[in-house]
Amino acid sequence: MIPVIEQNEPDSFHEKVRIKGQQFLKSNSFPDKLKDYWRFALNDLYSSYNKICAYSAIWCKRSAASVDHYIPKNVNYELAYEWTNYRLADRHLNSYKNKYQDVVDPFKIKEGAFELIFPSLRIIGGPNLCKSKANLTINRLKLNSQMLIEERGSYLKEYCKGETTFSFLTKKAPFIAFELKRQNLIENIQLIMGYKKKIIKFFH
Image (cartoon, rainbow, N blue to C red):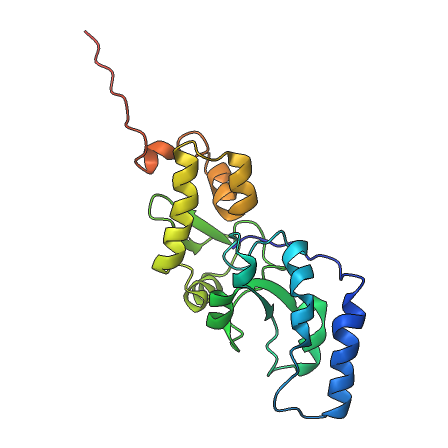
């Protein structure tokens, strides 16, 4: 996870989502189930945040994208129809987060809140976030699941083999690109990941 810059509310959001949601809430003071008008915001959310999941910091397919309510709907249903409460999330991570509130907000973290370890591609807490908060987030979102490690690995493999550029990596997997740059590994990651053998010179 890396810091995410909050994007402005789309012009059409008020009419497509907020008004409909507020009308529903007025007619249902204590609703058992909310109308999912937020689905009308998904396309705008997807494009506004460059198709990158706020939690994994990896590109996600449109079919896998979902609207996460950072403050869960069951905690404050009045925020169910507010753009500022939405985070673009891969549906798997959204389901892991669910109604829990122990995940840090990507809108509010600083650079260095999380770090990526090479070659294992496991995520750990960084110096700019309380260790307990980092661990709760990592565990809740399953950021070190085999699925996500393999996904990170596939992007890195393509980069190491010269099949994609660093610019492409920055667009599709910005957390990986950020960590390569921070750790000064842009040119040397092939060796660490085993895609390039170290040349030993013998002198006579």
